[in-house]
Length: 258
Image 1 (cartoon, rainbow, N blue to C red):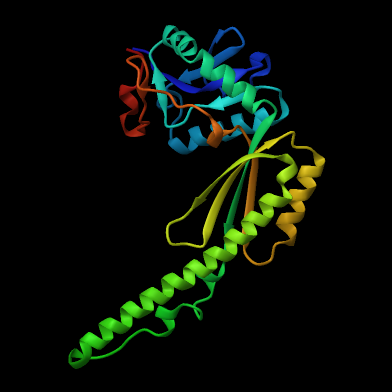
Image 2: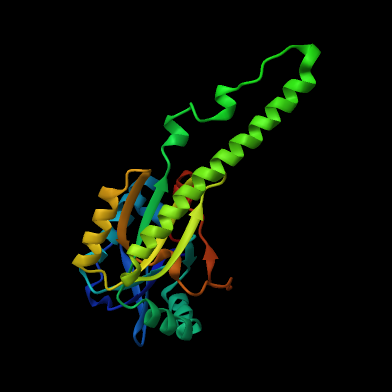
């Protein structure tokens, strides 16, 4: 049985770049298409090799008018016929998504206050570590939980600083900003922001570059443009022809066509 690993839905596929040396399959229905490759474990020696090829593929999309709606979480079908069924099943959702995301790219920002990793003098637990013996275990325990609460309050104050700066960044990018999603790491003053940008031009690039250069309060990293991974307005339902593909290179010998 053939395993076709779904990369995403596409429009303007005439200039779709190749996925390394891996055979790809494109099925179309009207303006919409879906592209897949043979199971990665069949053509790549390691997961890292597959991901490097995926990165090159995504970067090559930056210079062509192809619109790609990535399919996340590893989905596969067993034939081109199933790909055609998938296109017909989600025709309306795809039309809406492509209309909404036309001329849009995703950028990712990662914001973090370095004080949490490189400066310990502000950490109440590190600098006020309780000591004691069996005679005052109760007071030591109370002191410890007081310090835990103080650490949490300290981290919340740091997180507030990052969030305020993050909202300021979003305000500066507002002329190009169509949507955004914020993800905060648990109990850390660290935020990841996915921003959906429409019509990114030199003015946008200059503004983003100035933000990266000017910000001194915390560490900030940027990547993009990427396809709109975080902004697909629909999700695929479990279908009898659509299967979650868990890529396991340890089972590579069993992944050939059957």
